[in-house]
Amino acid sequence: MSQNSTPPQDPRLTVAQAREQLLDSLTPVHGWECVALRDALGRVLSKPVIAPFDVPAHDNSAMDGYAVRHGDLSADGETTLKVVGTAFAGHAFSGIVGAGQAVRVMTGAVVPQGSDTIVVQEVTRVEGESVIIPAGQKRGQNLRRAGEDLARGKPALPAGKRIGAADLGLLASLGVAEVTVYRRLRVAFMSTGDEIGTIGNPLGPGQVYDSNRYTLYGALSSLGVEMVDMGVIRDRPELIEEAFRTASENADVVITSGGVSVGEADFVRELMARLGEVKFWKLDIKPGRPMAFGRVGDAWLFGLPGNPVAVMVSYGQFVVDSLLRLMGVDPLPVRPTFEVPCDEAIRKNPGRREFPRGELYEGEGGWRVRLAGNQGSGVLRSMAEANCFIVLDEARGSVAAGEMVTVQPFEGLF
Image 1: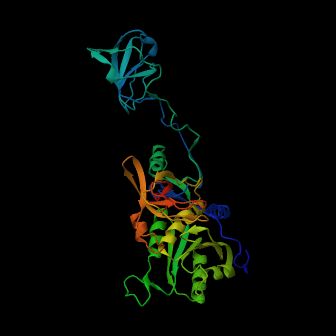
Image 2 (image 1 turned 180 degrees about the horizontal axis):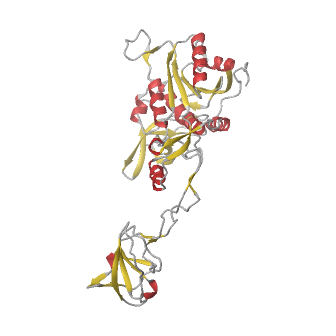
Image 3 (image 1 turned 60 degrees about the vertical axis):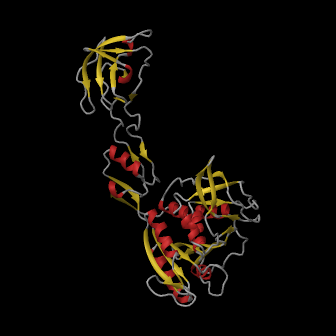
């Protein structure tokens, strides 16, 4: 690691270039632990879970109906079969289905020995102890075969899978009581600046309340990482340096907001270069042009802008996937985007990627998007009212009302 690195003088990176550098630099944290199944939600598997048996464990009926031998059925007309018993889920029919016989079956019941087809009850007609089966039944219909969902000895869930609600159910169906997961990622976060006021205290002249730490707290909480809140660090190099050293000794990742542009009191980038490494610090993006990425000590550092909206844009476009990579998620989730008409004109010059905040809604004729209020990078209300980014690529100029634009829903970003 370079101890005397200087800030790079390279041109500003595009969004694609910055993401590539980020994700190419990061590998999952070292360390794993075994956790009980109910504690595994949101955690990332460090090794695959292997199915200990077939799921389902036996051929079973996918429908309520009658188990029959397909060879007994007439191809041209109805077939009358004698009903010789019933099979319930959890209570198998103990006999064998013989020629001219049928067994009543319930969904999930083991397919009776000798039968090979399930006829749904809705198409049948019962007369006394017999059932009438219409023509047109297909051999093997309405059966779920043993191992159809999972085969014994095969991976049920791969390493790198972040466990969701369905995964918990799947693991429970295999009788898995605990799983091996990567240890929790430790993330320290702080705000920097003399203008930052603390909630609960009156604001001084020129001060604003610290919204960025609360935004980051909410976003990090949704990832389930272990958080270290470093509070507000004033614009004094020795205080920021001390905070960086403490954070890097106690966390895998350090996230700051403020102090990364070129003002006289913007010390984050300079200290990164002295304590570790700056990989990049300028992006062709709006909002969020000044964003630093590199290391301090043994921790990765993301130096986000100070403006509240720019913090959220930078976090959603760069930080969240970086944290998932460090958590061991593989592959990373693909963020859906799609094209919709935009209700309003948007002014833009070609040359950088911009992220206006939008409200995606279902209007006459389908989905549409409109701007979510004032688009200033300090107006956090635009994020609170929005549910998506409008993504305007580098080459695009101004948007006329009614033109198609790309939207990226917030789901999964924060």
